[in-house]
View 1 (cartoon, one colour):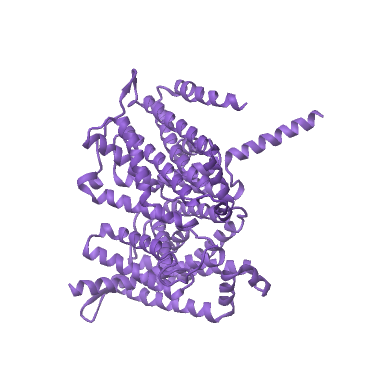
View 2: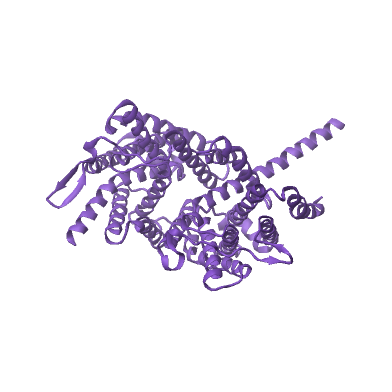
Length: 291
Length: 321
């Protein structure tokens, strides 16, 4: 029994690292623009399909397709910003509907370009097993992206805390007008947040392509997962998002092990609702007074 | 002008349209499906327009309504029309479970309703003893025959759905004109200001959620008896929500008839034109439509047309001088 628990927790932590990457992109954009980008999961999926095409047409390892994926997804992400910034009236509601529409467009575009078949990498190294401490089983790609996810999250945290642009981004997130008076260009900062979200989505997309299977309808589920994690974490906490991602990963994996895989999504949803209703500012977020 | 509108709609709905398309079963079934989606779009708009809340999970209420009605007729042997009405009440009752989400705003509300829809879908799949699980329910009783008209037939189903949606529009109109409707409209401009003058905003929002869930459930119940088959992935399918949102936004979700007109236009054009051109992924057009409407005419098609005709009238008036 202990082995089962340990294995689920281990798999959950590894999955949590790339869940956190997806959620951070969503949270970053929400921070600067107060917009939940409902097409964010589709951006992640787009990166995965770029990796698939790079492997099949250019014979690249999924890891080597990162620059290509960053270029494609980064530009798409900035294009999403371009459309969003045109909304003037009723921004909260209209931006939700616009990004929802963009998600539908991207899902169907992926369906038309790459068909409905499911894909995963055929490079064998990614699916080879490693066993840690005679107990914990994982695929090479899971461990690789678990570690890579941690490194990227740490890098992002450092960037947000220590660099000028990172601070500018946090400044715009906390008070747009005051940031503008301090000589920060809010538009540029917003574009930057979408570009960084695209970068994070690219890494996560390649992780999913290497360690899991992809299909066109996956994007929507990824958006929902990312949103669940940001709710678990509370807004404005990078380590919180990482822990939130791992919490979701562990809960999902434990559900699969102890109950059935059919209930995996249910566990995440219930966790989401409970946290949302009991602690609306999240597990690690600061409490904010309304109005 | 306005007095003529209602009889004109009734004549069109009950006389002209059925005569024009009767016999063409394919077109009739498309129109019935479009009006079903129009009904959900109307329910969605009630919550969106009056409650100021976007829901991404109306499929939850639709699915619950369809399962409730199917099970009441099959397991309890209730008459179809009675259980349809009761199924609406069941959906309304289920919305009470979602009420804690009313404290949440904007995207949080939208996505927590989506979470409820997912939970209901999974329950319908896993509770095999009651719902038959993923295999679904076959041969759900069809609509009865009343006064010589077989409501279970294609054109009979049309009369039922058209009656339902017109009744919904009527009730919606009454709600909009009531003091509560006015308070809800004021809430959209400033919830805090409305609270200050003594309006119980949460109560009114909860009321709109219940009404909206009732109507969405009623449409689900109708659909279950019309197509006589249910499975969880179909009844709780996200596309019920997607199509309804596209229809409502396209037609104008702040207007009375906009969601219905939007549903007819969007669904018929999608099925007859886009599906023929793009057999796979034709929903891409719906997404593009949604994006374009939000960017260029956020109030929807019906207000846009009204604005254009007004401009034209002004121009012809100017030309006459």
